[in-house]
Length: 117
Length: 113
Image (cartoon, rainbow over all chains, first blue to last red; front, side, top):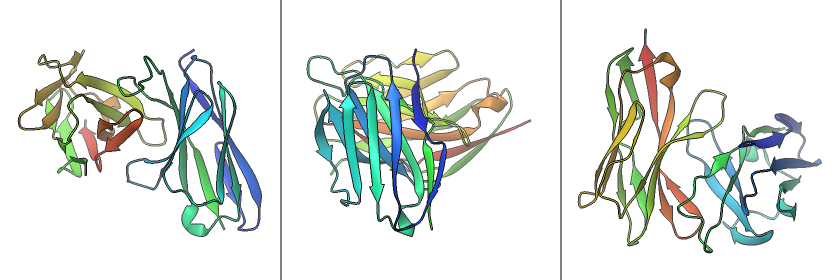
């Protein structure tokens, strides 16, 4: 299984709603990532988890709250979002070997297209 | 700051022809990796090809090959025998530290039948 799955595919939410994005992989990868991608732009890294611990937070606003319940799952909890947060949210995973993930391919999920009204 | 530059926002190629996408990068790291990722419209991003910076030999994957010029910090992607399914946004990326990718701005490739 070389797949990263993400649910839901599409999400529309109001600025006062609370919702969650889910990502799952069964490749035994120990690094998992959240990216935000605006149309026609490259992905922007938001968070990295390594061995279920938060390793990188790219100064993301607190209205985005990541969670890694186990080595296969990654969630992104959303609360009080702004219209400018509308984007494609990508999850990715990669192996970590010898403490390094840099030489390993990141496998991307199909993304959740989020619209904030 | 580390940067990756893709100077061609859009390219077109005739089916069965060859096209080269350009990428230059700047890094202060001695050990790094370079990638080309493909993102078709409304489909997920997949790895096309990877180059380890300490390897002089250019990577190849079937119809895809790279021209890696380390001194010039250049990493171009050549697609031979272009197919309609090659139409996508192509992102060049360089590793930065243990986990991060620095992505270029992307090149949209159109394949003409």
